[in-house]
Image (cartoon, rainbow, N blue to C red; front, side, top):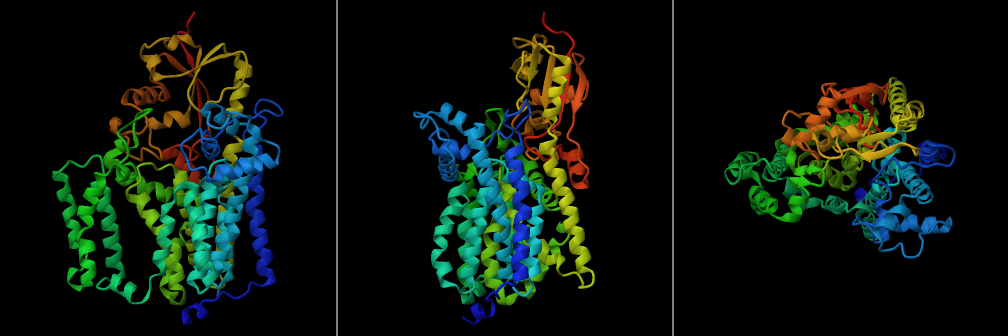
Length: 578
């Protein structure tokens, strides 16, 4: 009770409340603007072009037409019904009709606006968490909220009609409630399972349940830490993560490769461990081996070797050990900005001096740390949006670190970081408003093509041109052959599977390790983009252009940061069909 009393959050002042409102509006307005503008008007007033093909998945699930969590879909369908937008009779249970309705402009306007609102509401929730964890410095919570509000990555995910921003909102709402419970509010502790259900139901985020482990204190916590220094405990946990990563990797030679797991036994301080905890630590490598043979665990760690588009997520093999942690770093740097990320080490170090609220910090960080370990070591699928739940916590830790600056320099440090993050956020979101596919429509009007091959994600404009979905096999002689069309239009969001990107990682020297493609397709796209195919002449390139260093470096190494916005390359086919 003493800890609860010492950690009770003081009432915010009127100035704090006004700043909280300002930060919320700073988050809400650009997110709502993106929700009602991106994709509209490309082909004239009132037209709508679907940009993100993952939108509406929860709606389709709620209508029985897709295997996905329906929780957000029930909400968007209810809100759409209030706005007079409802599916026609017979849509439920019909996958094609459900998809058509959920991808319609009328429904997506509602779904995007709801996602934008929940994304914006995550900002004040994060501020309130900051006020609970650092009540003596309310500026830390406000700074964390401002960093998240200005994040272009979080903003872009918020104005998309997917469940990712909504999932993050429900996760942090649950964490805010449980943090309050950890600081002595029994009513919050009792109500927390309801919020846990929402956090899990949105996108199967089971890691939320680990927050309750943070409530463990006293002798149990001391027994778990017995014998460990902080550094040795960190190395042991990271080593355990590596053990699971090795055991579940598709490139591990079995069974001989299991010998590679044995050096981990050198990490725990066996003689100083609590007797009851020696067995759990001993079982780490055997458990990793057994779980890697269990299909449900393998699906979420190894991934399949083959898929609909060629190789599956498991084909990456050993390259995953480099890709996963690098993707995690890139998301934080692009999501918050490099200056803000420089405050993360100091923010983590400052936790050692916050003993009165150590229990609340554990509740907040345990599920997020476990999720970060999963993404860094095990996750077979590493689209950047999967890292989104880590961004608010990183913003709070960065704010804690930036606040460590000397008082006379702190205003300059905070203003500089917020200014940089604002410019980076604008540059990131501008990709959607300067989508190369908008400029592509001008080329269509100018060139007037009759027959066009187009890859996925090109979204060609309506008109007289005849389009066919391009398959690299056509260039190898499969009918109708490359000569059927006059032009070939390729989207970076499709051909990037042949290059370094968020799924392939930085190593792309072994074509069989590339994800969602085949070696033959990868070779074709590489030759075409390099100008080495004599049948293809590059006539126009519509690139994504950025100003901020984080995005420019990412572009040079990994391609465009956005998943559904990328360069568009137009090739003239030298031998068109007659």
